[in-house]
Image 1 (cartoon, rainbow, N blue to C red):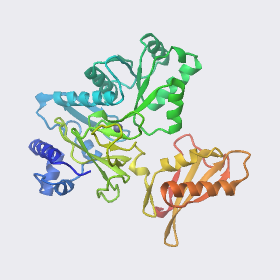
Image 2: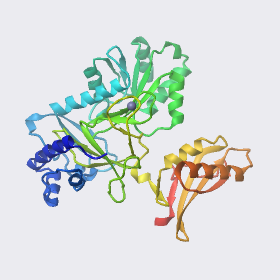
Image 3: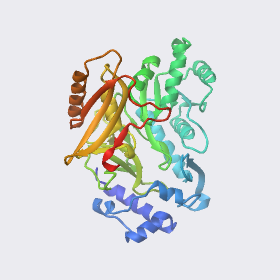
Image 4: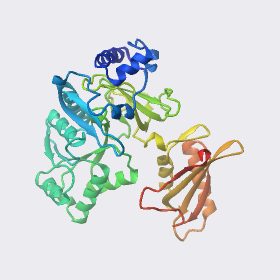
Length: 412
Ligand code: ZN
């Protein structure tokens, strides 16, 4: 999706602010010799920004508005290295709430709803984002924060909460606990708004099955406001995003080249209105694709697909981009297989080859037949034929930590 003239105008305003603030990106522009963009072609020449740039700016190097205009900071947790500090102006905080309220509206949530907010409050952007959006919409916020399942369920029943805001894992935990305690009848929940870490359809079906609720995936990251920059509409998997506030490109994570609409790659975001810490062409390392065309719901906002994982997980085989999540989904279609698998990619006789090891559930002996059917399914869904090896249940390595499922022997 090419950048529009209106969006370019907003980018130029951000460029001016970044140059004036002498931030890291202002320096990048200086080096690239770019001070203005007038066409989609110009825009693509702008340098990317990376998480590392943001870390290097610690603590307040990203501040692009005058200090007296900064009203709040947030910080990304960051498992490695220094955290990232994002300053917000009053307008940024307000714009974020506007976007978040729009997400709730997209999910059919109204002023009459009561939202039980279970993501954490504090330095990171989750709880407070859900809360501000709720207040902006005019619905009732029940600001629980995470944990204390007894209290959560007690409040959910007493307050007759109609919307659950949660991570997928916490939503699942609550659903199972409610079922176990035989309280499903006393729950008034209608919808769940779930932070968009990658979660399986199995998990989705389980939560909505127990609680009888519609589920919505909300997208966002601390560097770009926080959650609330996109959400799926009723009955659809794809997420609309707010292109009056952000511009999204999809690039090939290896080459940095823009990819055509519909192709999978890395989400790159440019903030169009952010004042406290504008970001131009920020590489998210999230994998998705632009969904071309208009949505059947009638919304004019463009769409991306549900997040498929991180670019670090992406494999390229015969020129086709493949993610472990795609393989996982295919294996989940076969009741005869366990959920365990291992992928080995090698380069044999000038060709990339994927060997896919899967486990047959105990007692099964028709390994050849299963292997063939899985290979055919991968071919029809992803576009190449792997060598599928079926082994007995329990033979693939399991570990306490995240098992290493992909081994790329081409680079070893
Ligand atoms: Zn839609």
